[in-house]
Image 1 (spheres, rainbow, N blue to C red):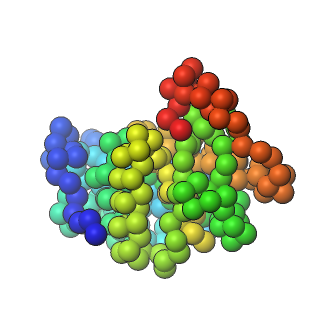
Image 2: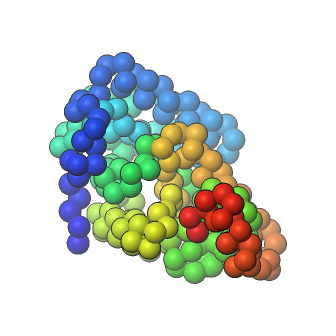
Image 3: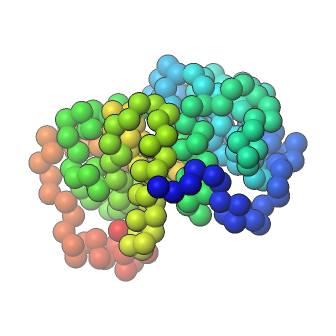
Length: 238
């Protein structure tokens, strides 16, 4: 098993402690994203969580927070050693978020939701464990990529951290870095360099699940030559 400690080299170029201005900006961005996702039906009740970074600190929504009604000053700020600097008690998924930041160079903002069609997909059966959906559309290939299924564990279970770390490492080793994982019966965890990039991954992922379920899983995947064309033309990493 890999260590859950944050890799100090992963953030060596950033400031060791988020400045007051950076923390305020990061908190405002989390509030903006939570409100946007809630208003568009991607999150409900107190399900899901959001995080980003300021320097080496991780900012994450508090446990049981309603993402559409976040208060900036209550968002948790957590130091690299895991100690909370300010805000309400951090989400129970903090260890998972920290491990993704350490393992993926592309992770600048993380989103975890209980998106309806993606959870329904895990209840009825995913395409395959290493790819919860087939490559149905060009934008799914380009914007989302491979999404592995993480077997069910209760929310916040430490075993999930190890499984996600391994999925990230395996994908990187194949030269196809991932931007998302799917927690069985719970929902997706997606990330990107910015909040808007992460939201784009989530939206494309949820809508592709919706398309596949609405069409009774009948459509065939894009053929290999079409995927190769996307790789050659747009640099897709499928």
